Length: 108
Image (cartoon, rainbow, N blue to C red; front, top):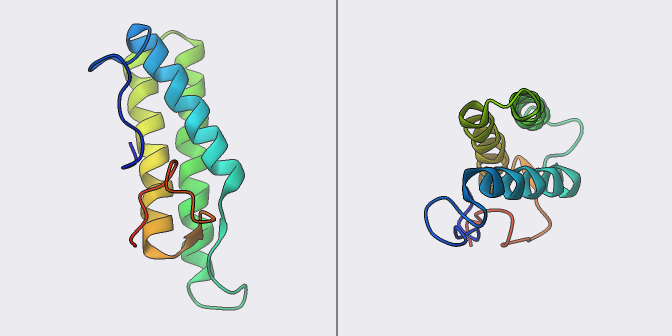
């Protein structure tokens, strides 16, 4: 996940894969609630900002669906993609993460 998110309790995290999944779902939900478009509304890059956020939301929805049906591998993969989209968007300046280095990999 992001640079500020070390695994707890070893490779599977606290509570094993289920605990790791729950932690990453929580972290990604919080991150989506925090981010805002990082581009002016009328700029050419605003479409990219909107697309990155839409992809993160879509992958999070997939992760929640997979988690609900008990497919923990796909859920963890999807939530990882969701947070990856957020990290990339913040790092590139398409999204504004509010300077939160605990949820996002910041450039500087």
